[in-house]
Image (tube, rainbow, N blue to C red; front, side):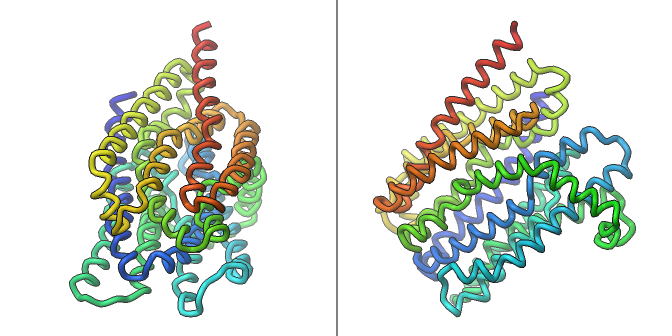
Length: 418
């Protein structure tokens, strides 16, 4: 089991590496060309679009593989895929209806409207098409790696052309933030269609009475888990939105820059769990002791990765700060993000365990608890310290989750041994 996971890790490592390259390469160029304040305005809408994306994904990245694990017939898998896509399509339409209100309550300049609309439509559209959950279940990690490479190369080529040509085009600059998810979304959709040998018109075949009822049932049955995930959105991806309203777009821009760098880092560090998740689904039912060993193994890999990243930063902090921001003024914000990364693994791993063990109510309770802590702590700290206050509040609010995760592992270990 561990050898299979490690092999998948290697492939997924390249996938997330490509995802991490984009912000590392782009950020210095973007800041130089459009400035941190204007980027802060865009980052607010990118956060809204990311919330829309998670909204559209619902919780099918968790429940989809679980449902596939229980299905053997190819035709049944095709029907399940159609129902999930239709459910996501319903949410995407609701998102489009919601857009005018979003534009009404958010600050922006008229010359930014075209870029903002592309952000708000194409990033959620990418989630509608995204079938990563299906490919992960079928262990198609190499395909995901290739798509991530393509998604990373295209924006990099755009930036390279602009640098060599010596010209500025804001539309091209901002497009680099939605090209990657769109390529991955479209690519995974096409590959999943090939695996399922879809020969008819997929969209038309989805819109059938049976599939519509099935899609609605899936939305209803997974609503409690979805609701808990939406609560987590209140603190998970909405940082630039809160910071922008509380401290201004410049602070939102600072936060968003590091968020886009550190989020792939967290994903890389958690890729052991990503690779293991399809296996853990069946393992929980068959062998709880082996499941626990894999969970502990995942935790150790994550902590080792974080220690390596922290060591690199401490050795090269001045060079890294200057490369990203062009100055040495934001080192405390970097340190705040490193503290956050150190404990960020506990939430996803605990949510995964509770989902697999059918404890969705506890997931909701956990997310409500963290949301209340984040709102109460981060709001006060953000008004005083800006972006640094938000990340510190987020970190403090997750300490109880880290403790709960450790306690859950300890309790599960005692239960298995007894």
